[in-house]
Each structure stands twice: as structure tokens, then as C-alpha cells.
Length: 371
Image (cartoon, rainbow, N blue to C red; front, side, top):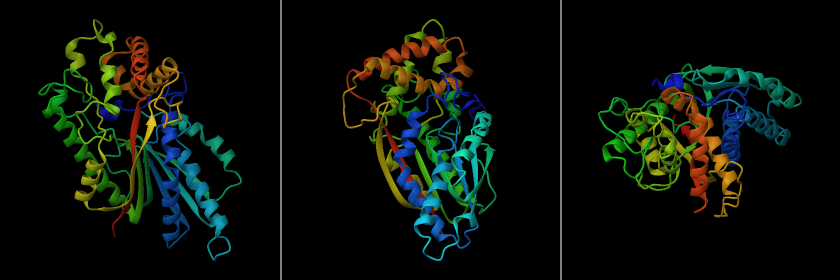
């Protein structure tokens, strides 16, 4: 499977689309808003020439969240200038913002562009002036000219790797009871996942460093894990393990086909991320933290460990995972299995949530390019 061709969220704005089922990602962006706003203000203050700022959102996807970054950056600069107008600063109207929205070519960019009219209505009385353009391509490749971008942002994207290792896709190593990493995943398979993630993140940092202006900033948010032991079941691993054990697979999918399906995905620990950043040695870490978000995108109470409506929560979680994984599953197994698979999956999630509320650990890291 060519990851760049088939890794995208479910397109459109229908019941099973990412646009309709992306509340989880919205919650993460709202949680990380203070870090983003702080990065924007610091960067804006440091610009010697405040006429232009270039901002790129990597892995923008489609739907209501796609333009949240544009809204936040415009609002942050506008509010900052209003508060600081007594000082001798260029008026907000003097600055122009260029936004690039990046994702893989399979992303529903048409839906993104149709949303721009609504954004223009909401920002009609706000300054600075801004421009928005799409930028299709993998963020594991060069996307921009050298020293051309001031701020990179990425939310819920960097846990996706550039590929599934050849040793897995060709069957040299077998991951027979998981589509990611589970209790029975062999150590050799875990090592392949870890090596691919480390290689990809290091490449990502090097590419972005070359594209950033001197002292440019990055704010990155992605799924991670709290345990240093990746083989310990829990966190993100559990969602994929439950999907693998849905009995819908039995009789409908050849075992060889199921065993050969592995996600191009890795949820790192904080220590793993730090180690790659330090070894790469191109960025200073300005902020790094982890927070938790309930599996159920409609559940905003992370302090309560009890799920009151397990059936509805199970359905919410299943819809969220379907919006993310459907294109990959459809490519590998066909479309006929999808409805039954996610109906059973919703039931399994509901049973799992009766034990206790499940939460995703989410890592946020704010980086500044070294001079």
C-alpha cells in the first residue's frame, strides 16, 4: 500500500466523514491554544520586518478544524496589536499573513476551499490581511523554499509514519494479532515501528529547519503514550487492538490479508520524542507537556473516571476511528466490510468503557530553530 496515496481522512461531509467526526482533534487544538498564542506573539515581536509572516499547517485535513489555525493566528496578532497600540508598532493592517494548508494529495482540499468564504465573513472586521493556499504533499519531503516559513503548526498528524516497513508489508516479520502494537507483538516488530518513527521524526525536523527562517518556530501536537513500555497494552494501543479483534473479520477476510495489514502509525513516549530532538540538535525545546483527552470526543470531563452512557460513547468513538481509518481499511479489504465492522467495533468499545473511562495521551512540543 502506498501510504502517500491512501493515508487521508474520510472525505466529504457525510455521516462517516472526518469533517463530521473530528471533535476530538478540535478539543486538542483548543487545549493547546495558549502555547500557540504564545508562540505567535513571541515570533511576531521578534520579526525585524513586520510586513509579512508565513505560516504553514502540516496535516491540515478537512472540515471545521482546518481553518482554526488561520483564525487563531489572525486573532492573536490582531488582539496583540490592539493591546500594544500605544507603543510605536506598525498597525495591524501593515502586516500580511500567508497561510499554507498542507496534506497528502488524497485530502479533500475542495471542502477546505469551500470553507474559505465563511472564514472571510468571520474575519471581515479583523486585521491583518491574509491569504490562504493549499500545499499538497508529504511532510516527510521538502515542501517550501529555504528560509521561507516563520511558523509551522501540526496537530494530530505526526503519529503517522511515512510508510509501513518493508519487512512487515512483505511478511518477513509477522504481527499476527494486531494491526499496530499489542500484547503479543514480537519485539522485532516493535523495534521496526520504533526505528521508522525515529527516522521519520528526525527527517521531519531536518526538513523543517531548512525551510524555517532563522529562529523560526514550530508547535506540534500528536498522540503519544504515558508508559515507557510500549508493549504494555493501554492508551492508543487499545483502540487498534479492539478493532483487530472484531469478529467481523472472521470468514470475510483471508487470514493472510489480515496479518499483512499494519498501520503506518506510532505513538511515542515523551522520552522518545526528546531523544530524537536532542540527537537532531537543530531545535531548542521551549515547551513540552502531555495532557489527556477522553476517547469519546463528546466527553469533556477528563477528571471523572466513569462513563455514564457507554453505548453512545462507544458509537462516538467508533465513528471517530472510522473517519480516520476508513480509507486505509477500504483500500486493503474493500468497502463491503466497513458498516458491519464498525457496528461491532462500537459494541466492543462500549463494553471496554464499562470497566473505566479511556483516555488518549496527547503530546505538545513547542520548538525554536537554533541560529
